[in-house]
Length: 267
Image (spheres, rainbow, N blue to C red):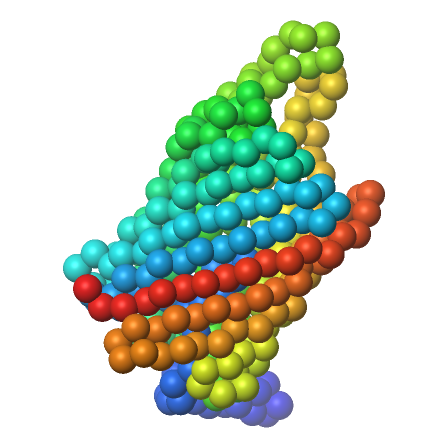
């Protein structure tokens, strides 16, 4: 009898989660975590981000454009990075070409939009601006709005860089395939239609070639509290935001700063 009641309660909860109607709010302007909403039909988004690391003086700027293809089901986008490493080496990084498929939408329990990306070797690998090979990345984002005031996003991702060339201490060269993994989540408090508090959590498992020429793994965790606001000017929506990512790795903890600016409009 107890199991029967639990099943009934779960059934009612699932039905209610499908049936809920929520008020308008900012939902598709996450920072480090990827949300699972493709662009609406005939609506384009232009996204600029800036990430500054205090300890290393590294700076990363990215520009992304997202375009729907014949509706919300299919989306194409690209991301162009510009980097400054140690305030000395500067230049274009590796460009990402992305395709996303809207697998689940408002008719399902949550939103799911798997992404497949090709990473082009446009950054100079000799200066640390790129990897020097064509790479691939897969990410599966899931988004769920629970109430009028709260929404969560979840990400699982995998990156593969085949035959990356590395120079060892004795100036010999080796080529190794470098896999890396990441997963993360975020919780967003929708204070009102145009203002949000957010907190994002990401964990990376990265690979690199060590002095012996072998592949070794390291991990890094990022906790990033932030805010964002929407400014609506007719059919144009502008969303600026700022966050303070805190990074944790095996050696140290660092506070950084992240800026976000989005322009979204019909075309």
